[in-house]
Length: 328
Image 1 (cartoon, rainbow, N blue to C red):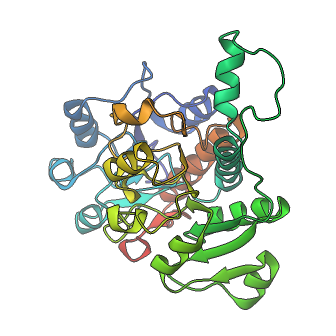
Image 2: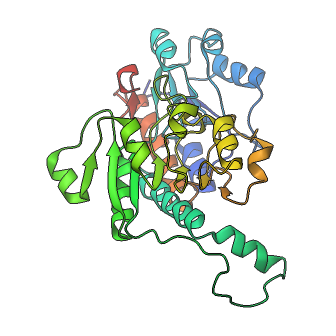
């Protein structure tokens, strides 16, 4: 395989430097427009290519994998999450799946902290007043938010990103608490000054801010459901830069509208771009268009990882970022 140039199909526009390097190394078919591929086009690509490079906007399910050609041996996902791909079915069909973990940790943690500050300090409301030309001057009681220092932060999912958020929040004087599938090592807990909660319910009921930093899996779908959201304190806020499916969006919207939760900062949504319209109307909600990982540096590093995974595979070795079902 190393003697031939692999046939690679890329489903979305990538940074110019990444596309140029791919063209140098592989027989690449690039996507001319910056929009998701139609399902039929994805199937056609999977029938012709050795390697498919999809993004999180491309759903690669069992039915599509059943139509893949014999040449397809690697799906090199441009993204850290792989919940858009049926990894188990791919493996059964002899198709490897790789991703791009680690490179977006700091960028996503930055955005998480930005959302915490934006919600608690009412930054979008102030911005809206200024842009509308409605500011009439400083007042002692205008746009009063809350101080983050001293508040309890509950981190749901203490992996790379969760720990990076905890480090930032600790620097702001927040008290760090967390719930995770596995408890951290004692030295990591000591470094972060983090308190472990075995019971998610108990942690949720005592936090001032909840940040979602766990992946979307069958076990985390609606992990923050209506019952659990009701455990939150009325003056608490929730932030999600992970996966929208972890929160029951309709239940969250109802509780925000009813004043049962003080606010929310969301970068991801349960139904992708189909955001609950009632959520958009709320003053106590900050909504972003999935910007958590959107830095030039991060996208370049993602592209480099994709190229390394493909090149390593082409050379007859295991891709360094190979995903196996046990990891999910």
